[in-house]
Image (cartoon, rainbow over all chains, first blue to last red; front, side, top):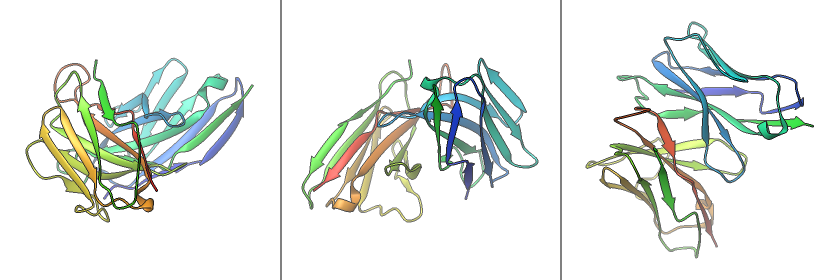
Length: 116
Length: 118
């Protein structure tokens, strides 16, 4: 089945700096890669996603890049703010016919701390 | 739109009792719902895939007799933790896949249910 590895597990940056979180996946049939932000005790919130036919996507201060050949994708947050502090999860979803069709498999999570 | 409601948000029970958690898609139909379990400071682990009108598909290592899943309608899936024990204490989260309309295919999460077994 799909295995998603996420690094780093913790990340501390100064306000205004950029933060980068990286993930790799194992199933080449995965075709959808969302990123979630989760605050303590709350549900995960989708912040950006990318499909396998796209290499990069940007939404204001957040961007995601995907390298299908290498099977890795990254989250980039620029001009970080204290309210960006949370746990971030990457995930991969298998395409139809894969062992993980439609299933969202999460990475281990990254705790991001933005210091004011 | 695309709201998923989960109930109860918190439950405390005695060891040996059963607890039912409901997951409802409030404004869209969901033929597939997923149940996750999350331990403190850990990731979300997929437990099972709930399919409307058919048996749930459980991930490896998840006891189907322990975690009963029922998906009786296009808007409701339930997870029952049977004969709960302290090790079942966890945060359980459901998600529903939208099958039509805006944001089709996207997964929407419930608020989560924190189960504490004494």
